[in-house]
Image (cartoon, rainbow, N blue to C red; front, side, top):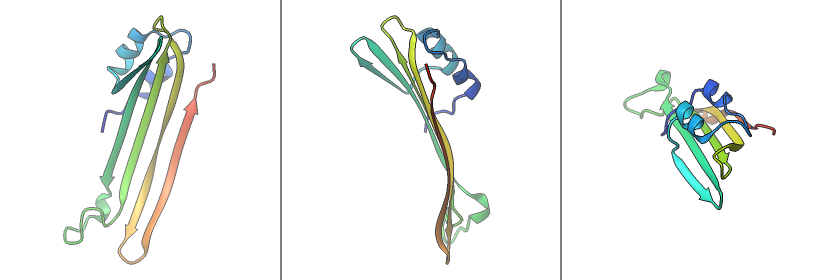
Length: 117
């Protein structure tokens, strides 16, 4: 779902400096736009889940060996003049193993950041 954003492009965004036009140029059109009073929020979402190829067993099913998952969210808040007021990002990934006799196990690595002003 969505498209993975280039982290270098996200890192170019600076609160109090970057314009709405620059964000669109660097990240593209947002997946969701919210307007609240004089502020506008752009949100970008990415999620991907794929079966682990080493565990594919056609008779049992595609997910018998587990699933690799990735996610990324970027939220950019603009003031009434179209200047970035706040940037929030989060992302991570997880690997879920599903053994036939051993049950399930999960290994999770999630990172979230809010850029300080």
